[in-house]
Length: 409
Image (cartoon, rainbow, N blue to C red; front, top):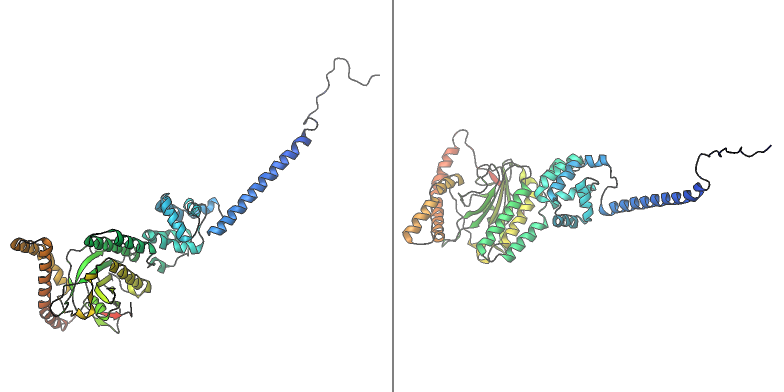
């Protein structure tokens, strides 16, 4: 009996892989799998090392991206893929540019020390950044951090560039003052308390000396007007006079009760800081920054900022704008509220009348009108002071506020 298949019977097919297939394919597949895993591990290691080098957190998860959205979304809207600005921020923070892109995409987050530096790098968006950072990373900043930051080096570079490139002296000063004042509003008024910034320059001297300072360049936020045209004269009873006479910074606050100098106070003002604008032992005027809230200049950073802005403002002035302190002979002037009303009503009209009558330029006519207003306000000051002394004896009268010296500026 034969053991083979019967004639015409087909051999049965075996299931599974052909013989030898597993042996020839599995080593190759195993090798590729190992290579893939090795490459992924290397990439992860490199990403981790890069994160440590640039100051990033090493975690990159979708959940983290959602958590970081208030911060990353705001940063993205601020930088708008602006490579020049991104490069500046990265350079200032001493990190790689790719790190900034990861922050903007929400795939990684800065370390705490970088988060705290960022609002001072992007000073124009300081308030919004701090709020977004506190929302995405609670507890990074306390409430005081919403206050005053440092005057960054960018504004120094900007002012020096303007001084070096603008030839016309009047345009140069206006451009520098406007740039400085706008920067100061952004830096100091993050809480929207209301800030007024004034540069008051010395009036031309009389035979016996300089009697007052006139408000020359002004900028403010509510409740003050953005730019006031009614610019008054600051006499011996003002904070500016106290600062220029003592040759250093003076502050005033409505809450101070002791060691105070009697000074006139402008409308809305509840705290103020005044710093002389000086060069080489001579003075050109005073920078005064006022706040509609009390306690503002109890912050040392706020006072330091006023001093730095005064130094920067001095670089935009001419040498002839500075006078020796010995020429100061400041006199009392009418209260600013009275002055502003008088100036508002007649200043421009008087300039036109004088220019037409004497056939002179507007600049010459304006100089004459300013001189006559100073003379009038000084002459009428004793009469008003007498009226105020009588009024202060009445029930419920408000006494003048006062200032405190803050030491050498």
